[in-house]
Amino acid sequence: MPIAESLDHFVVPVDDLVVAEEFYVRVFDGLVTKRNGLNVRQRKRGAVPHTFIEIGGKRMGVYLQSDHRPEPAGARGLPTYSFTTSDEGLEALAQDLDEIGTRYERVANAHSFATSTIFFHDPAGNHYAVYTPKEGARSNGATGRMTGVGYIELESPSVDDSISFYEKVLGFETQSRAKNRATLKMASGQTLILTEAPFSPKGLIMSRKVPGPHIAFYVRGANWKAALAHWEGLGIENGDRGAAKERTGTESGTYMDDPAGYVIQFITDGME
Ligand SMILES: [Fe+2]
Image (cartoon, rainbow, N blue to C red):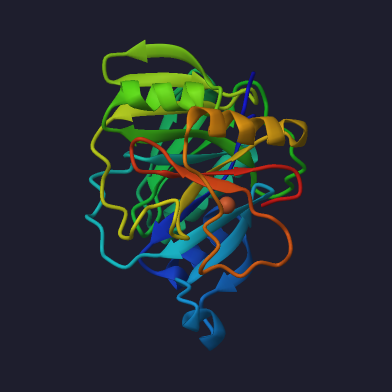
């Protein structure tokens, strides 16, 4: 049974919130929907400044780092977050990256599911891939330049441990396993790539107990209770890390740590 159906959204660390907002709004056609941690009430609670930006019909986020991170070596790197787009969207992205002066690599058939992919990193060094999917975009009502959330490629100090986690805890299916890499499939058709590499510094503490960057997967509403029971049965600690957050009445799912060091969020219908 698939526990988690799809990759829903992600929240990444950045070294400059204003620069990140401007970049995401321009290249991803994003819409800034909420800024947090910028007033006294939120600062008193210990909130780290962060911004939510709607991209591809989903609410992405950027969190201000506490420390600098090493400069990325090239356009491609780990981890890689991705969005799907149309042919026109890809052209518009390339034009914006040219105008801004962001280096990128354009690759045909970079993955079995992608026709044309543009790889680049944001000003903070987060790696992105934007691609035209071979089987057409997943329809999620998105109307902007990005049509949806695509695949994700994560660092994995132990690929075996990570495979085990994503198979058992999320219900993903392993499609291929090479020496240093594995490809897993979600029920949505999205791909998770696990590549053997050390977990690089993210510029802040990454823990399910601390509000911050995370990767969110969607669990169907009808499966939510079964999923919680499944994780309890596996003895995996999870919970809402609400301490420094401001709740608006809606639940916000549950969080756990993956074996590499990423924070995973699970959400279901009515949560974001
Ligand atoms: Fe989230």
